Image (cartoon, rainbow, N blue to C red; front, top):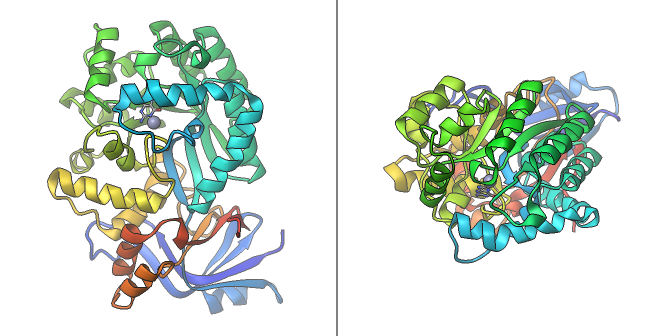
Length: 434
Ligand code: GUN
Ligand code: ZN
């Protein structure tokens, strides 16, 4: 792969911005450039600096006046729910039963999985997301399709087949033994292959028997470097049903604790209605809460306590949660997140913090900050090119824009996939042109 220079306005973070005026946590270069080589960022700086480090005749792709930022990281979404998005009128448990499980049953078919994987990653890339952390269906075929398509595009992804052996129709259930065997086979084939990582994925306590939770415990013990992902405290009815199924547990998180599923590479989707003991346990184990604002608002689940968890030291991630979530766009997710936090307790998520969160913040939550989430030299060349004037309404608003923070807030509140001019995955432009 030949070296390439990308020219544009660079923005990358090296820490979490503490206040709206905090300029110490990011780097911004007005006439910036990146030298890409072999899927990595080889050099970064002003255009003239980078050009002087590049070989004579190196091709420059000029993205000015657009912003170059690290590719977005989506830390929780469901690959087999691409046709579940925008299903009307239900809260979590009915939504799962009426819409989600029937859609996921179709993923028993390998052809359907392969076709949907192409569509899924097309949407993800169109929205500037370069890393996904996905739940596949309970069928091994769905995880094979997910990892195969991601590998074809050379994307750094995390995923796993869902473990679920009860409280769901036969077409989406596995068994403790088949779930264990399929997960083992998928880990052997995919974990650490290219840019892929496996996530052991018990869907949530309602859909796994104690026998299956025990197999998840065994998998987690056998594979300490695999991620673990599940759902927690999303909805009041869900919590009541969970506690009825596990009456000896001190609380919902106590179930996952009992089965050895809490550690720093555990991702817990939602974490809305937490008890104080659960928060203590979350902090002690360093498991990561994942905020899914469009889903939480769409399903009427509730409002995530971002400030409370942050004050305790939790490293929260943010995610779309397709298809409970309503948009593949991390920008739209930040927009809804802003509204959700403002409604809960008046918190105003400021734009530097928002862009940090969808990039380096999520990378840190995944423990992958040495590879993704920044434009640092040596980092993988996953980059999104953002156009702040992509729509006429945005262009009109930009006419009075006076600062980088203001521009970022315009993107956070007004942008979607139309603002994604290009998405680079491991140095290759991937956004399909019409
Ligand atoms: N809890 C268990 N499964 C799911 C799911 O698919 N989506 C959401 N939002 N919550 C869940
Ligand atoms: Zn989910």
